Length: 260
Image 1 (cartoon, one colour):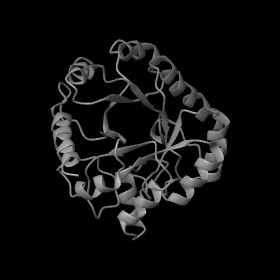
Image 2: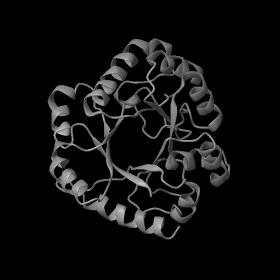
Image 3: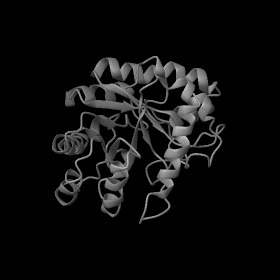
C-alpha cells in the first residue's frame, strides 16, 4: 500500500488544524514540510504539537541553497543545518535537497558529502529553471536533470533519491526523450520516495497542477512507481482556509492505485 504525504510550508500555520483533522481521518500518512529559512523559532513547535510523521524539504535556490557553486558553500551549510534542525525536532527520518542550478554537479556531490547526514535525499530537477529572476533566465539549466548526474551525486555523497515524476517528464521532453524510459532509468537508482502532481505531458515546465487538471497518464505512472512507495503530493492549493483541493487529489490518486 502506498504512503501519501501532504506538502506544506513551515509558515503555513493556517492549515494546521485542517491538516490534523485530515490526518486523523486517514486522508494522508505524513507531512512533507518545506523549511522556510529563519522560521524555526516561530513555527516548529506548532508542527510538533500535531504528532504527525514528517519528512523535511530543505530550502532550494529561491531561498538561498545552491550546492552546485563553491562560493555558496557557507550560505548552503547554514541553511542546510537549519533544515536538519527541523528534522531533529520533528523526528523526520529524511531531508530532501535540490541539487542546484547553473553550476557543477560534482560540486553538489562534494558539498552534500560534507554535510554527512544519512537522512539526505537528492531530488531530480527539470532541464530548465521554472522561474525567471534577476540572476536566472528560463534557459538556465538545472543540476540533476538526468540520471547520470543524479547517480554521480548519490554515489559520491551517500545520499538517497527523491524522484519527482513531473520533473522527470519535463526533463525528458526538453531532451526529446521518451519519458517512460527516462523515468525507468531514474527508478533503477532505487528512489526512497517520489513527488507527484499533474502537468502537461508534452511540456517542459513543471506546473504542479491538481490531479486531473493536466494531461499526465496516471495509469502509466503508477505502473512505474513501485508498490508500497512513499509519495508526496505536490499540488496547488486554491484556498488559504481549507485543503479541499488536496482531498480531491487524494481521492483520484487512490482510485488510480486501486485500478493498478
